[in-house]
Amino acid sequence: MSAIASDAVFDAMVGMAGLIVLAVAMSSIKIAKEYERGVVFRLGRLVPLRGPGLFFIIPGFDRLTMVDLRVVTHVVPQQEIITSDNVTVKVNAVIFFQVVDAQAAITRVVDYFEATSQIAQTTLRAVLGQSSLDELLGMRDTINARLQTIIDRQTEPWGIKVGTVELKDAQLADTMVRALARQAEAEREKRAKIIATDGEFQAAQVLANAAEIISTQPAALALRYMQTLLDMGSNQNSTIVFPIPIELIKPLLAAPVPMKKAAAPNGAEAAKVAPPIVAADGHSS
Image (tube, rainbow, N blue to C red):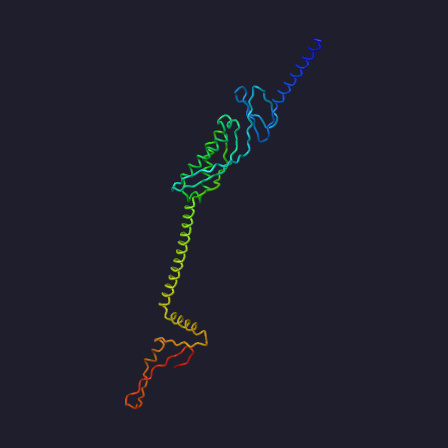
């Protein structure tokens, strides 16, 4: 009986040892995806990078940390900024970054994700605090480029590459929104008045040039006068009385005109015959 019991105990121990060996073997087998890398510390010392694919570690001696190399999209929490012209703005942004050196991301910073997020927040406050409200609203591309350059320079020693930083939203106080609306309206009115004044100036300048040309050419003045008469007489149902220019009747006034005297009841001389008035339709009165 004792021999049988000893064999059973031995078989149990062998089975348990086999299970332990199998568990150790299974735990030593690791698989890294194409976008993953394994950072391994063996007894505290960094060993060459593992992955992608199948690799082995020594259980109990190696400590493995898997690092994702894909681009990470991180929304920077909303920050309350005071711009250089003393305007309070609430701004948030989105940052795109990825790990390019897995070993540096693990060995040079405790938590590269949290560190990158904090750097993005502090840089956002610093850069926007040096910018005016007009620059924040109208020069976002320039501000985004500055943010990307500064953050990437600070995270480069950690093996982090910052690809893009975009300002996502900027919230202004209601009073500031109304002030900007009034400013925009005043700016539009200013441009409208400038355009109207410029048009009047150009029209006056053209009229002045035309008057100067006509004043040096009497024939042009006469032609313009006749054109005006034609425009006025375009309606045949109207009769317009207009004075004749003195230049046209001056030869008639210079010629001698015989005067006839008629007997009047009171013995006074008859009045001189007045020159006729010519109408636009050709009749005299």
